[in-house]
Amino acid sequence: GLNQLLFHGESMVDQNELRTGKTFFLGFDRSNRPINYISARAHSKGEYPMESTEKLTVLTMEIGRKLLRPPVESVVVLF
Image (cartoon, rainbow, N blue to C red; front, top):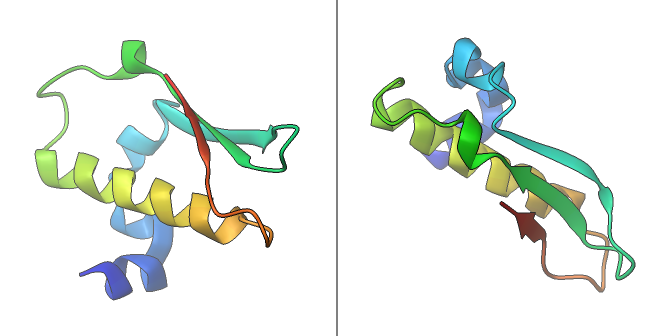
C-alpha cells in the first residue's frame, strides 16, 4: 500500500522505469510551487507493468507533496 511505498521509496519502483527520466522535479516556480516535469514522449505504453507505472506516479505525487513549503498547497505539473 501507500505506507509501504513511502517507507521503501524508489526501491519499490522498477529501476529501469525510474531511469527513463519520464518524470522529475526541477526547482520551484515564482509562487514557490514545486515543478514536476512529465515527458509523455518517454512513456511507451505496455513497456512496463501498469502496477509499476502506478507506483511511480504515486511516488512522484508524494515527493511533490513533501516538497511543499507552507502556505503553498499545490504542485505545478508540466507535460
